[in-house]
Image (cartoon, rainbow, N blue to C red; front, side):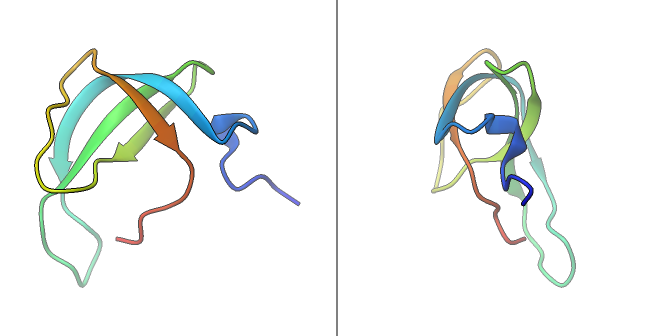
Length: 73
C-alpha cells in the first residue's frame, strides 16, 4: 500500500526550516484565515504545514518539527 506521508520518508516526525509563513483560506463551505507554513524538510522535500493553536512565533528560518497526518479543511 502507498505511504500516507511520503515526505517524512518513513519517520514519525521530520525536522525542517520555514521558508514562508502565511495565512490561507479553507475549502468550501468553511471560512477563516488558516495559519500555515511552507517547510523545507531535512529530506529536501518542501511541504505545507498547518500551525495549530491560537497565536505562534514562527517566522522565516524558524526550525520546526513536522508530524504526519492531514488537517481536514
